[in-house]
Image (cartoon, rainbow, N blue to C red; front, side):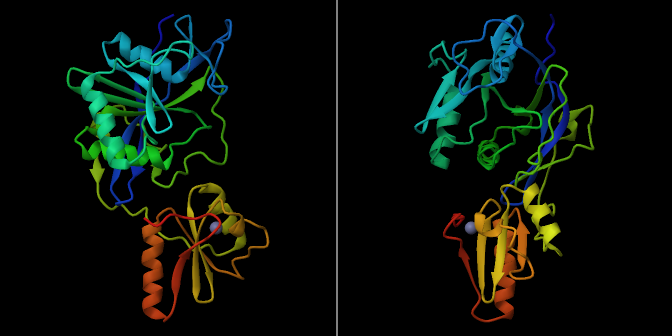
Amino acid sequence: MQLSHPLRPTGVEAFIFPSGIRVEVARATPQFSVWTGVPPASTYGRKSVVDHDGRPAFAELSILWHLQAEGWGGAWVTHGGNRLIFRVGLMDVPPTEAVPAPLRRLLADIQAERGTTAGVWDVCCWRDGVFRFAEAKRGGRDRIRADQVLWLEAALRRGVPLDAFTVVEWTLDGSAPETPKARNVEPHLVPRPATIPTDVPAALRVSAHESVQAVYQPASDADYYEWIGRHPEGLVLSVRGRQLVLHRTSCSHINRNNNSITKAPKLCSTSRAALKRWAKEQGGLRDGIHLKACGTCKVEPE
Ligand SMILES: [Zn+2]
């Protein structure tokens, strides 16, 4: 069976960096077939096994193998104990060290800069001086995480062009993507499902300071709970008298049903900077107001 290329772009996905810079990354939406043969011994925590031209694979490996067939060198990059692990096969195939030197250098540089391996994109490749990165997400299930946004930002800062990146939102067989509450709600990721340009590279663009860093003040409890439901990694500033407490939306303190906004007004945002700015403005108006991070959910200072 002729497999269509899993990186063929069908749209774009917008990312907003903490700086406010917005970029659009190509999105591919391939459909994989479920593997119906003998299941592999280990599925790395019950990952879906897909059929890659008659071989069992994970989505990441199918993407990698497509690229390898075109002469790209690289790996499905995982990490453990702050160490990058380069995989080219299922779990019975030992990790490889055979990664193109420029790719290894870039990954090491970004790791050194960020102080963590977290956020590295799933499939990292290099060929003739060109990088290629893909992040595989099961459509409707997985989301781009903040770490992956920051990793993208670090790579772009190092001169990797935007068109080296593809978000691969894959589905299995004919099954429609599931639509859980979490879809499309990452703090720095603002998807634009409405536009599907046929020529994605032309649509890739960078423009600074598009407005998405706004602070939202819900007008009712229903609005508030709706917002936190749609922003599982957003931030909430809870106003209690002269104290402003910054929480993650997942924090139990601001999630309970008795947490009415009439008792403690809430400011919601995906941007810590925007909430801080707001708090500063308030501080300018009223003396003695201070902002603190909740001791339970511990939003790190930036
Ligand atoms: Zn909290």
